[in-house]
Image 1 (tube, rainbow, N blue to C red):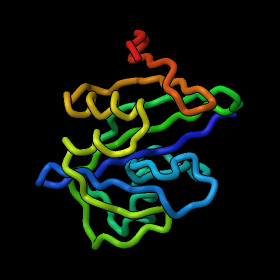
Image 2 (cartoon, rainbow, N blue to C red; image 1 turned 135 degrees about the vertical axis):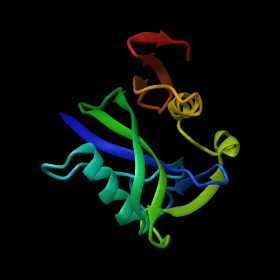
Image 3 (spheres, one colour; image 1 turned 180 degrees about the vertical axis):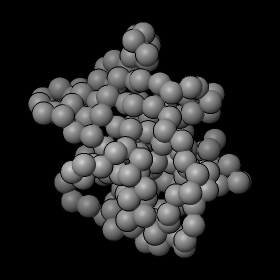
Image 4 (cartoon, rainbow, N blue to C red; image 1 turned 180 degrees about the horizontal axis):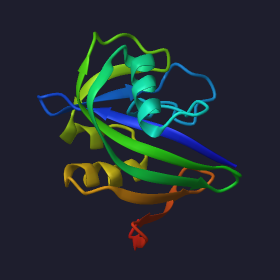
Length: 160
């Protein structure tokens, strides 16, 4: 089985990312982690349509300037599902920030993101975003205990 999702990092002029501290949903694989906003595709949606919809649903904001930065493929021991996460950044939006039913939204300085409880593989794609890396394909393989076992960037093995 394959699942397509989006993950969007809104970045303000102060160099902060809008982060979602996932604390409100039960049985959440991301429980207590800090991630961007996003979620699963609805039938017939493109990655861009999903990113716009998920951002609006989780933040109340409507994206007006965004970039498709890469695809992150996840596999995890013991799961029969591969997730293809379409990664976006956004520099402009309209509307007022609202509460999210999945967790707490907070603007976090980019350099402080690494101090938060985030997935080990997220550190890799945050570095790629900071480097302004052109569109990339990143594969992250995790153990059943959520330990990063393998990372492959554009077909080349990375040290983990």
